[in-house]
Image (cartoon, rainbow over all chains, first blue to last red; front, side, top):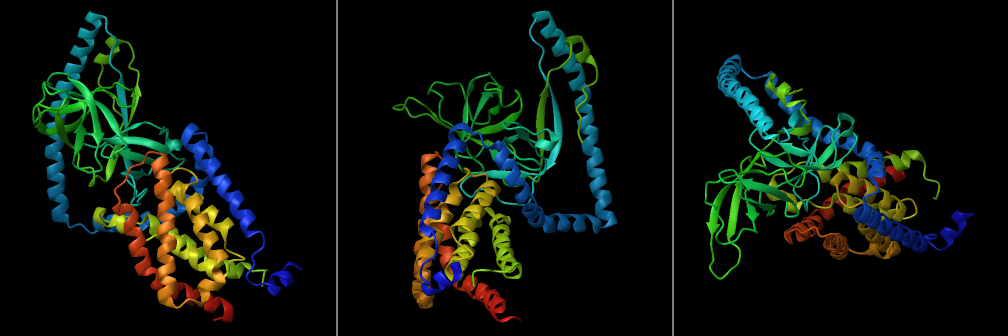
Length: 294
Length: 163
């Protein structure tokens, strides 16, 4: 019946306008709910289940390529790599010995000062999936999600320093925003003197802006910037960036300071997620640090 | 005509899924701003050729999936896709008789409309992005349109007349 009617007037599609208006209204409602309140986490998770196979299929060739390359690496190259890693581990271990003693000393001193002892961080390695996300943002997709305990706002680092934070924890994957995204800001301090400020992303992978430093602020090119822990999203003390240029303009109230992220944000392949765990009694902190790395 | 069997829907669905994959395939950083909007092109084609089976409803669902895949505001791509496909379905008979040059110009306008909606919603939501990331996909999308429509015509004719 419907077909005869639509056949008689092929230009007319039944209820196109009405459906269109309803769907437009529905998208508007969704956007307002999502943007203003963020109530739609569950909806996102459910649709994310449909997206996951697509991501897996896109990611698979890259994974396969890496796997094949590792499998066909020559014995000689493997030996060289092994030697390099062993040397590196030796150095790291030596530094770690000191760290244990320092950590114990720090806990003792804090105990003397009756300060709250610092939280210990637990770390888990995740891999960046070879899929691109939002072209308007600096995003990465990582291969673990809510199922593994990832939560919104969690700090993401790599071997060198902070690279971003999780902003969409899906069930099996999570999307993280990089510190270089123009809408990302990160509370930091200058490692040398504890001067606190904010580092904003610029949209450029190797530049951060520090827009809120007065002209007389004590900051120099080469200063290391670390997370200050204010704001709560990032645990304190992780390296973020190196100050590259300080431009003091006398007429302007603020200095023009830029910094380069310590990790190369566009080249990372493996990242680490941090869970801050409240450490037990200060005395127990003398025990070996047990950072679990899966 | 109205009862499309699943064997007819499947290839169209496959083409949409391939388009979604092309939207998330990793590209070098310099090329990201020039990724054509594969999903929009595919949906424009199917809305033009069989608007009874593939119009605003399917466009909206695909848009929501795209929103989740890109971590965008839920409803952003859905709204833009829905609008573009509505215009296409509304004028599908006209667009079918356009010569390729005129049709390509129309697709350019539709892609620009799509990016404008995204731009507008990003503006309201305070997501700032360089202008090239809006214009790039419009230009490359227009360039690849003849190719996409040729490929999809192949699929459609095979569906219509058997292999």
